[in-house]
Amino acid sequence: MENKVVEEKEVDMIPLMTPYKMGNFELSHRVVLAPLTRQRSYGNVPQPHAILYYSQRTTKGGLLIGEATVISESGIGYKDVPGIWTKEQVEAWKPIVNAVHAKGGIFFCQIWHVGRVSNKDFQPNGHDPISCTNKQLIAPIRSDGLDVEQYTPPRRLTIDEIPHIVNDFRVAARNAIEAGFDGVEIHGAHGYLIDQFMKDQVNDRSDKYGGSLENRCRFALEIVEAVANEIGSDRVGIRISPFANYNESGDTNPSSLGLYMAKSLNKYDIAYCHVVEPRMKTAWEKFECVESLVPLRKAFKGTFMVAGGYDREDGNRVVVEDRADLVAYGRLFISNPDLPKRFELNAPLNKYNKETFYTSDPVVGYIDYPVLESMTR
Ligand SMILES: Cc1cc2nc3c(=O)[nH]c(=O)nc-3n(C[C@H](O)[C@H](O)[C@H](O)COP(=O)(O)O)c2cc1C
Image (tube, rainbow, N blue to C red):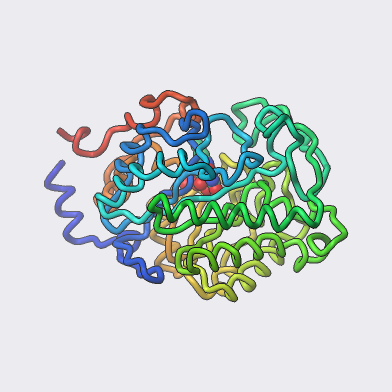
């Protein structure tokens, strides 16, 4: 068994494991850790168990995107997700980031505001959650299907308040750099605040932040600009999911929306654009679909990352066919801390257990998935 593995390694340099230069970052391969909420940051403060979790998933020259990390108190929508707005949170991130750097990894922090995907209990002083709209989320079931949520009707942000939220993203990015992160990924996907502004099924504003494509994307692009000016454009990525409608965030013309964003982002010369595949119609299943990210890939001049339902074969194919530069893996990376190595060796993969994705245990389903050595020993 071991001999066979070694032989395969010698003959096979798979496309996913080829190096890639992303701006100033020399990546040794293209298998990226996708942002993954794990709800183990008690009281919104990153915990020491995250040191091992992230370091298990680090490779020399590998890119990791941290779990969605809240930019301000009003940005919280789930229990025990990490934040990056207080000194304590910034300090708590430092040993985690250091551990990733000690193994040669490159670590981006995904910065996040949930907008209306929240309820009063998570909000400062029990206020209503904020959004571009005052339309309430109806679905009582969270997009992962696991948890029943009660959503409070949101309060529509006034036009004067919007620059303050943009500023919160800017400060969070500054804090991420202070914590040692190499950059930030702006979370513009999955029906959270930025996506709420972008999608015409949510955004019902009639001011300069609503209506036309240009107006609906203004908030996202103002954040990109503010964050890029603060920390340098080479340290900024953004994730978008124009085709997804998680958290009731559909759009009537997702292809145009995606293309508009891809083209507009070129102005800012950011490190990467990360797009969720159209086939991820729900957070958990792949569907066959006619839409493709190729037009966005062609329109965007920088590094293009894709995510959503990829396995080894599919990831190799997307790289070979030049439909993406990088591929982010979510669920497979949860259950296979050494995923790049397993891909390289074409080794079998551990199965993931959905039941423990969001449980708060600091060990189970978190840092106890076996690496290859311990399986073959
Ligand atoms: C447990 C879990 C948590 C997730 N948390 C986030 C998150 O914090 N931010 C985000 O943008 N996407 C999040 N996602 C979506 C993943 O980043 C990824 O896009 C999705 O799992 C599809 O990729 P996959 O098929 O490789 O798992 C999450 C997915 C899972 C399964």
